[in-house]
Length: 579
Ligand code: NOJ
Image 1: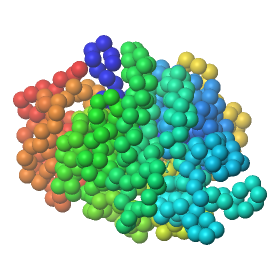
Image 2 (image 1 turned 120 degrees about the horizontal axis):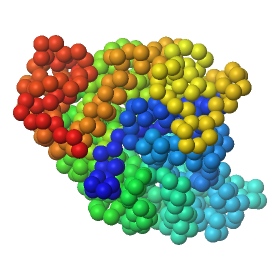
Image 3 (image 1 turned 90 degrees about the horizontal axis):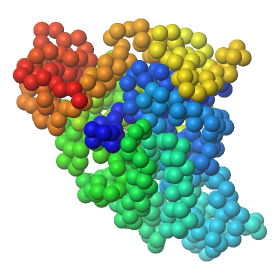
Image 4 (image 1 turned 180 degrees about the vertical axis):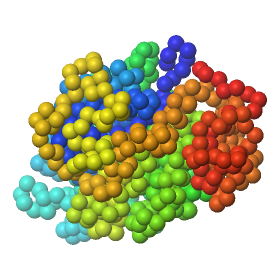
């Protein structure tokens, strides 16, 4: 908490970085920590308070790094722990905090403890750290229960024992390369306490907790009855044992000083839920400081659906405890997704592939409007890298280039999440569009190195070598979305985000949300004196009475807001206040 009682994470704008796709300093086609470090100036100019890094730990990449083989190290492809330390220092020089991903539900099948479990006998203490069971059937050839993996296929894989015979099965709710830990074994909470302290001691401001509604399983491992319901309480979701665990983590977070930089430490849980009652235990005092609020990802482009989404989130808690998001590395890009009138479902990617480029303009306009809506809501907001550039979902990745285990495990039935993970275009032209080996396009305000520690490595530029192709192919027209192009265009997505974040800082003491009646528009006020108006309809609509248009996602003429647009207004009588 700062001297004035302000807790930074309660209204922070956090930028999600998918490190492999953000910026590649050494030119091998894979983003890395020095690359991110060389772009901190860009993030400072954008105006974010923190970055959340998805996993950058050593990993065989069975699931984009969410299969961790060492929780306390950096994957050599992405850098070193020294690079991480420089990143945290340089980010702090820009007043940017660093949040890291904690992956406690499962590790990688290459983790030394899982290898030890494979090498040990059934019933051994090594196996007891994971969920190994004998199979059903006369030869144990059937899985121990009927649970299925989120990526398709059974949630169990059979191992070969030391004598060469088929043996026990282990549980993996995701890929077979991601064995689930047994959280009832006291070794596991102890291991993760050490991991949490390891990163907090290195100066991170918080943790994003992967599958925070998972971890504990019903010890009887009962068969599921009926079709699996993904986000409802079940033998492997939302178990009551979670909350006491999170209270112990909160105590660790709170044992770090709240004064000074980075301020009080947060942890934000990835919790998907079906009904309010399911989420409530996570919001009790003393548990995780925050849980994600995915409500704005779920609706199609309909005013009523957005209003319901906002109301249902606010009925549970404030946006401070449940930050808002419109996208992340698991869901199709908003600029493509909001083209659809229907809400998000596992079928959305296939729908977008079928749509091709149809209606792309409307998608872009809606994503700009959604950004203004997101950033006007009370509490904290997360932006996923590339949203500020209006990147669309890449729908034509060749099958051979796709990496997502969901694509592999469903034999292509579900194309997966690669389309929102394509490397960022920094420059208008050139191989990889500035993704590899660049330190920032001209005029980007990018300041490599940040001045407090040795220059971020740009080995490629030093060598003058030719960068490798990006690890996922960028579409041929991707240069028009580049940072370089958008900085040169006053009306670009990037400039809309930069202005919105600046205005948001100036108006950060804005109060609770109050819906306003406005013909044809979704409209709310935040006292004192701020109004958001969004037009989800097909016709222009008159803006409510206002003093000034602070920002609009599309040009406004004659006081009328075009379709698929939003505006920030100052009200007639009240003056917005500065904290
Ligand atoms: C949620 C992560 O966001 C996703 O990318 C990952 O595949 C699963 N958890 C499993 O770790």
